[in-house]
Image 1 (spheres, helix red, strand yellow):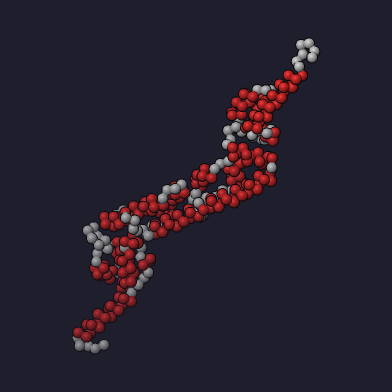
Image 2: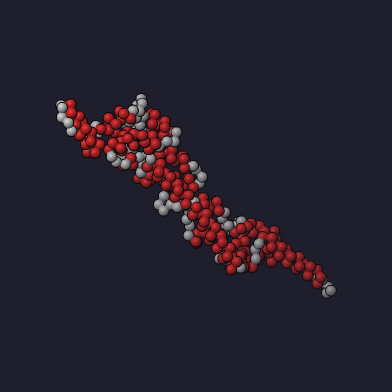
Length: 294
């Protein structure tokens, strides 16, 4: 050993220790050489590596936790590294994930293009967060899956209460569907439609609507009777028809017998076969009363 020199064995020990610290930190935090040229994380990783190479392990770790890379969760880091180190495997796993997530999105009436989905995958975003973020794009227009079913159900409730869903609730519908996709019950929005149907109707009808019945159910006996007398289909009689609505008064509902009498006074009835037969029968009865035989 030369005077004043440092023993070779000591130098080697120091270098080995420094290299070990460098390797340990890189391995511990999943930062490898492949990241150095990454367009987003590369500059920060180079800085961390420089500190490690200088033996400043504590400072390197501090910079790591401040870096954009250090703030990613484990899934995101793993997927980015896989993309850099084994692109074939990355694409295979991405394809399998996309098949699954698209099926789940479709069942909820959600959509996203491949570019958006790949970013979610690379960022390590969990499925429920993806669903929540995509909910804002839900619309009645082109709705499918669970959301399409919800639209059909609400449309039926609206029709059964004399409304057109898109026309009468169009400014609220997309918001309803977004809330339904987040877990709210479709019954809550069916109730809103029925509450709207209550306006101006007798208390008894309102009480029946509160119980979950629709106007189509409540007025069905009168609607069917009216359809038979007017010789039309029940569905062709609007639920806001004045004669139909008169079946329920402020105090009680009208008897079917009295309701028939009211329908026969409606101008529409006089043009039916029922009316002509009744007139002919009445005329024949009068003739017979006067001694004429038919």
